[in-house]
Length: 167
Image 1 (tube, rainbow, N blue to C red):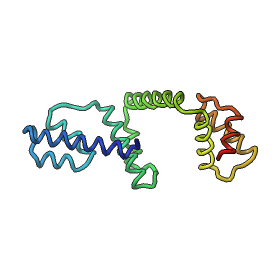
Image 2 (tube, helix red, strand yellow):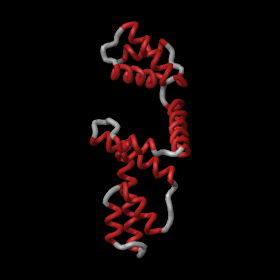
Image 3 (tube, rainbow, N blue to C red):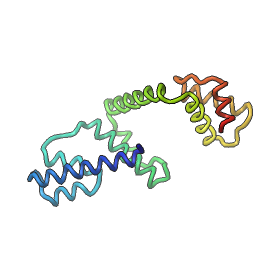
Image 4 (cartoon, rainbow, N blue to C red):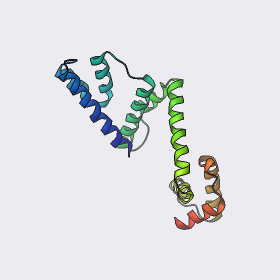
């Protein structure tokens, strides 16, 4: 599931929550509608209507994903200042939670995906960065990329060579 799709589902869920809060008399319909206008304001609208609070680290991560999506869609996949500022404002616990989740996802993927796919991903990454490489220099660079970015997979030369032939 892509980030934009996941955020759209989350946004729809929050809008439904705000509608229920208005129906339940915890806020006016116009307050709910104002909070529903943007994903960036929906959590605050729910907090205001309920008197509760969301976990700050999780909100920071979600807001970062929202800004990443905006960069993908509106800024040609380049980080804009809002995203840079958001990441710079992370607390140590926000960063630690982000790293923990990404490490868990990475561990799950390592064992679930076939080695052939991992080798193909190395070559795809390399060809995107340096499309003119070929021959021994291509294999040498693939080794380095695999060791640096895919080290825990421990791809060997045979697997990388086979990926070069496939791609």
